[in-house]
Length: 435
Image 1 (cartoon, rainbow, N blue to C red):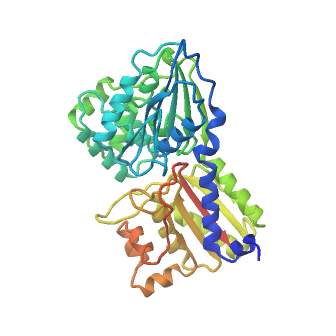
Image 2 (image 1 turned 60 degrees about the horizontal axis):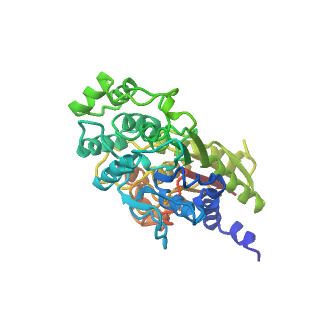
Image 3 (image 1 turned 90 degrees about the vertical axis):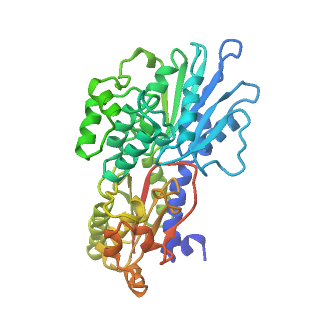
């Protein structure tokens, strides 16, 4: 029996295969080298590497491997704790690990040193910026008058608020001394190349990691409005800086960004397309809904469940057997204390309740960085037997959803997907298999 036949007989393995393909498409080692420019003339300029994000370690590794040995190279990259690729020992770059999603002192100190490295750059120097999702928390340098504790409290409140990623990053960049284009502006008059891996709906570079190297079209007034909308309490210094405009970010048209170039190395859509191709290679029809789906995780789960039921029962709008794929970044409004789980697992719990064991429907949802929120899993699986198996263990899906405890629901079932850090990040991956 061929490997394709084996996958078709094992829905769990098939869904995991599609997830692995999606992640592989976004690995820096596969995509970074082709976008590197030639080194500057060492007698005139130098090459400085600056970066932050969950993929930062893998991006630094790929750059060091591809950069000519005889060409000078130095710099600093920040990644999440535990996200340095196994066996990677930086030779020419410094790699620092820091906390995510709530920043810590290690990230603050590294961000301050990174900003200091931009001093004295000239027009013949080249700065390569490696930016990926998670960089906003990792690159935490509070605006003047704010403390790290202020930023931590605001970040925690934003994460629990249900705000969309663009809204959260609007606030974050205006309370930062390095994000929202400030790092890019500090590199002037050097040549700057930003290499990004997108983890945001729409692939807006001003939202990825709060856009440290690109100009920002949002305003202090926007940040204030978002805080009011979600009930985010601001310390006096933060409110004063936003109300006065003192914390305004560099805007499009700023001459300090003249000649800057940005290349998108990997996007959610590209990973979804790779997974779709893998499904078709197995003889399954594959359909991509969108790479920009946002909203409350449990509600988006219900929407996906409704679509899966329509296909399972009526062969509409797609004929079964098929795979339906989607991406984006959903949100979780945390209303209970003590629960465990992230966007992907809460999406699945909402979907499982809506499906009620629909025959032939299997789901996988997982974060492509390998970590769902702050847990040790990327996501989980739902099968037609999920609710029955849970009931046999005394687990109530609705009770655990009300408690924001999706991790606590799926873990006893053995249905968590736990690949560990993947060293890239193109956001949520969701696959519905209807047989």
